[in-house]
Image (tube, rainbow, N blue to C red):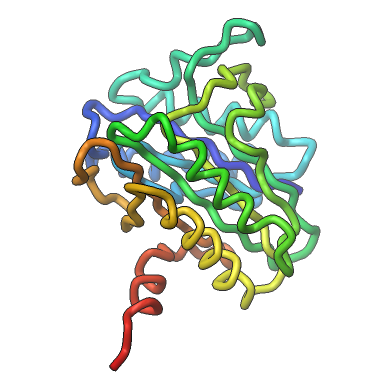
Length: 241
């Protein structure tokens, strides 16, 4: 099995996602379950970007990926990142963001999804995302990690995008021990926030930052439930005394 996450800027502005766009996407998520996805959800909303995540059997990977892109296309307020998709590997443009990681078989399968958006931070956002990947690599109970940003251009069942660094990358990590979700996510968040001008935001927070910045949202999918990890991370890191 795999966990896949596809992100795109399909908003009609550069700083936020409308409530109507969120509702329309969420209303279409059941279509992915009808196609055979084990789980599916609109997991991250970061600045003007949305991410749809699904748990899927290997043989249905192309079907579910295509289904996710169809939902994004059907509900797009403007085509944005969707225009970068090509069927020719040499002609893909700056398009949707794709992350894929292996999942262990079993009933309880957990994952962490990090999504990034930029306002003038295009030049260093890949480095921020890759530092989170590096932090998770080799950690206890981590069973799968998506490819480094800028190394993959093929999206099974969809087409190709450019390997040029995207301005809104997505990272996904699978974890096979519930209590390790907090450990792994905290390491990833800490690594990302150690970079310049990078800010942790709650889901569906507009891009209220000074230009030259990166936003990151973090969602845990645990036993089929979603938790916005920015909230417990903020509480956990309050200095007592």
